[in-house]
Image (cartoon, rainbow, N blue to C red):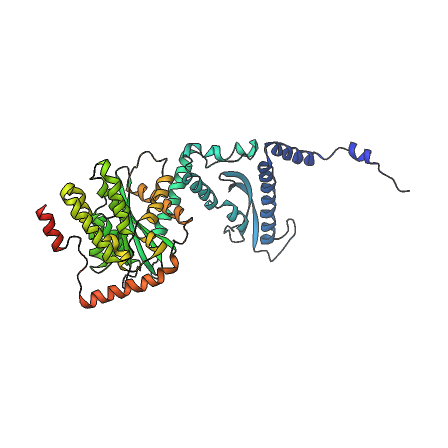
Length: 439
């Protein structure tokens, strides 16, 4: 006779103690949130996966196997990375019959510190302080949270230093031999007394690439030459011609001439030049001069633009000699892009260091929490991390469709100048020098 068990009998029947204990832990974790529940279940699954892997290595437990090549070796305390923290667990061990430890691939994957250091890097670049890092972690339950590690200020700092040092090494070891760089932008960033000179490259397809950096006390020629020499050593091809865009600093101009050669075309940032000229003028004269400068730089013809700039410099020589001298210094190099035939959006992009300034602004933003720069290594690490962070958001420059044509024109003019041994355009031609002397 079949016994029919009613639903009420099932509900009243007491579950085994082990099942009740497991369910009780899940209920506690669930109250702490979905992540805590998921972590609790995930750790249980991880333990089962490790046991299955051990069984695959040594065979089923309790069964004699004369061909066994490995044996179980108990369990030990271990840690895995979960949600930006190290969490305690137990892992099984296995050894070969001659006593060598066998690595469990499952444990090695989940125990890796790379995900942890990645989370720390992302948080600190988002300007989360090391002291507050622990507070940014989502709760995983009291049972696991009480034993979590690697969330203290010192542990977070060590992980960040290690990760940024790897990033600095990766950036400074980039092979540039397979990249066709047609535009090179160089600028400096001041980090409260420490200066890093950074380089940004633009390919013929319009892609921006963080190329490298160099540390020094100031933005001097030696630092810039070291940076450029390092880029050349890593494969930067300058034989086909490259347009260099700088902020107008004499030290950078000298470095370009020394390392890349006399015939390398240089475009000076018109925004820097504009600020330098206007700084020599009283407030009431700045707006008219600014309009004339921008009107001259907007000319489509190189000769007309140069004539308008020289005319303005001549007029300023009588009323504001300082502004005139500032404008004459490197005057022809403020319209190099015009001379090379750049037009439209591409011309607007290349006549300033704005793409490089955008990368520098990202460096300043990500390192905003740093109050004291301890040494040059720290400045280099933070700068490299900021450059790579900016690179993640890089887009192709405006006017990139015309870059290939510009690259051909740069190569053609450089080849012609070298063949004819034509001297580079100087900042103060003889006529202008005479004018300066009379003023």
